[in-house]
Image (cartoon, rainbow over all chains, first blue to last red; front, side, top):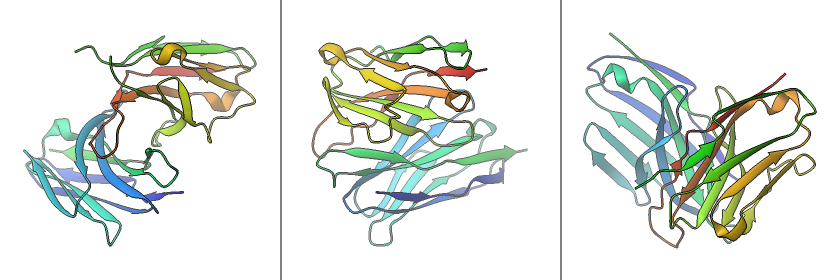
Length: 112
Length: 116
């Protein structure tokens, strides 16, 4: 099985930088996703990491360390519209098929 | 490109009644997922289909939940009989299938179920 851990809530100021951490344990790691979910809406894909290192996409970056079972999502120049839940999801293929497990999500509140 | 379609968007039923949800995935997506998301939690996988075959239903409460994906396209999820704890948003998602690609999931708008 998989164990995914991320903080429940975070608060940050508009214009600032925030880092959301995710730790995981899995036996057949095959990629880590970050999704954004605004209240009352469906999750939308933000980023994917399968190799160690940093992936940058505009104001959002995602980092992965497979040896440490650790990832973070970095949000720069925070905007009010970034207030949402951020879901870390790990893909595993130890069971003979691709299985994705979601964490509980980190609710980010951006304040003026 | 059309997204994942779900219906109904909202449903209110009494406990012990039955309910069914429908999902139409993105054309060409072989993998279809049904998730249950309780308020404040992450999505919990109920069942995963590859084409019309089930690859994972380990967390589906099979005494009351059932799902099918006929012809490898549309899918329905049924609850019979419903319990109060089934109140949640039911999300359908689809993705391409394969070995080593990104294959991110695309989610439908969800069905918000309230059991009274």
